[in-house]
Image (cartoon, rainbow, N blue to C red; front, side, top):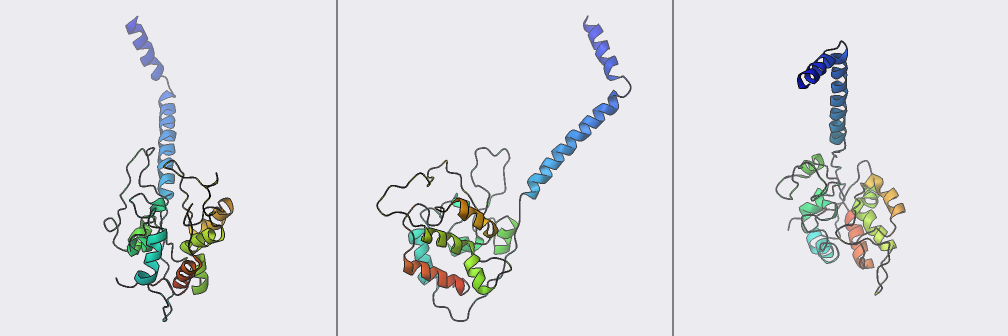
Length: 231
């Protein structure tokens, strides 16, 4: 009986046309697989760095005036290795590197990805642009005044400034906190839709925001070109 089944199976796959059919099925399978890989590669966008027009007269210095604001209002979240959107603000190089849509830690990831350690895996702003990081300080194709307003940093701070967290009151259900919170990392071009969907999603998130003096200090610094002086 075993020999009969084996012989029958052998004769079945030797029938004319079945070899061609198997080749077609295999070819379609490989094509679908390669297309999936290509789509995954296409989703890994890269960006170009837009030069920031800078004014000759600078009213504020980064290390003297801007960094203390970031340290007081932003670094609590944006300093660790898995900072939201990989935007690390404990150093000027992290601010210039910008943000990324890629997660550092992802339990559902099936394959490893190239590491993006600050000061290690990229050594210039353009290095990071080629690794999928986009600027939070400038927006390509904008004039100087529009560039500061359109920068992701300014838009996020403005959204938070216009929608402040209530003082001494519990956060309502609109604010998602905890390790299971799904981070959203809009690019400057995606920010308008993000703001419409998340009016409470400005920065700093879920805490008391910038004072009027802090907000205007950062705003003026951005308008004058976001110059980062030497420490």
